[in-house]
Length: 381
Image (cartoon, rainbow, N blue to C red; front, top):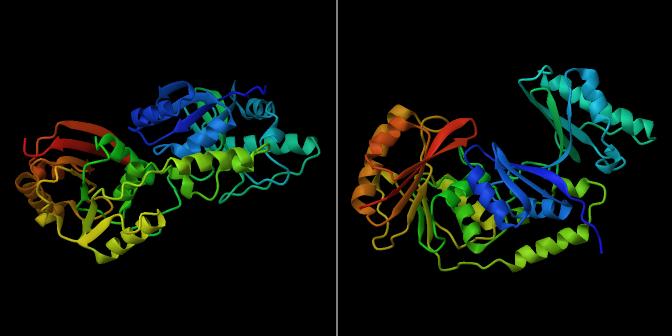
C-alpha cells in the first residue's frame, strides 16, 4: 500500500471570494481545509493539487508550501532557501522564475528577495552537478513564490503555472472583460439555481454567461487549459492527471434547454461573445442579440436572473454620461422585470443610486484593483 506524501497548500483568490473558494475546496473533500485572508489552506498530495487546478472556478493559483523560516537579511534568506532540495522541484534544464512579495519586514525590496532566492537555488543545483536553470520571465517551467511577512519567509512552488483565470476558451477580450475567476465567483454568489433563465443586458464579450453555462453543465474550468505548472515538476504522473481529466469529462451534463441570453449595443462585442462561447463548447447554446439596456425588456413570466456587470466609468464610459443610462436601466428593471432576481456588479456608488432599487444584500469584491460591490435584489417585491 503506497503512502501519500502530504504537503501544505495555499490557494489564492480575488479579495472577497474567500468564502466561495472555501466552499469549493470543501466540496472536493480535501484535508484540513481552512479559510484564510486571500485564499484557502489545505493539506494534500500532488493528485489533490491537480484536482484543485482542474476543478476550482474561483482559484487563481494553487501554491505548494515548501518551507518557512525567519530571515532579516540577505544571508539568512540565502541560507534558508538553500535548505530546500530544489532537485525535487526543478528538472534538469527547467526554466525558473522567482516572484516576491514583502510586507512589514526588514527585507523590503522584492527584487532583492527574488535575486537572493534565485541565487540560492542556482548555487545549490550547481554544487550538486546540475545545470543552472535559465530565468524565464514570460513562460517559465517552474515559478517559485517568496512571501515575506514580519521577517518570516514562506517559499512556495506554483503548481498552476499561468494564473488560473486564463481558462483557455477566451478568444475576444472586449474593452474591460471580467477575469474568468471573478465572473465565476459572481455567478456563484448570485444565488442562481442553475435552472432559471439567465439574462445579461450588458454582456460585452460574454464572460459572465460563458462561466454560468459551464457551471450549469458541470464543466471543470481547467479542461480548456493546455498546460499547468505541476506538469513540469519532477515526478509528474501523466496517467494520474489523464484519469482526473477523464473523470471530469464524464461528469459533464449539458443543460441544453436552459435559456441564457446576452445583449449589448456593440455588434463587435457580441461577435466576440459568440466566438468565446463556441471556444468553450457552447456554440448555439447561448443567445446573443443587439439591444439597448436603457430599453431592457426581459421576457415576462420567466422569473429568471438578471446577472450583469454594467460600465461604471473607470475603464469603460464616463461616469457623468452613464447616469442617464443607469436611470433608464433602473426604470426598466422596476417596471418590466418583476419576479426576476438581480445580481449587479458595481464599481460606482453614485451610479448605483441612479438605479433607485433597494438591494437586499451587498458583497464587497475587487475587480482587479477596483473596489466593487455585488448588489443582490428580488425585483417587484
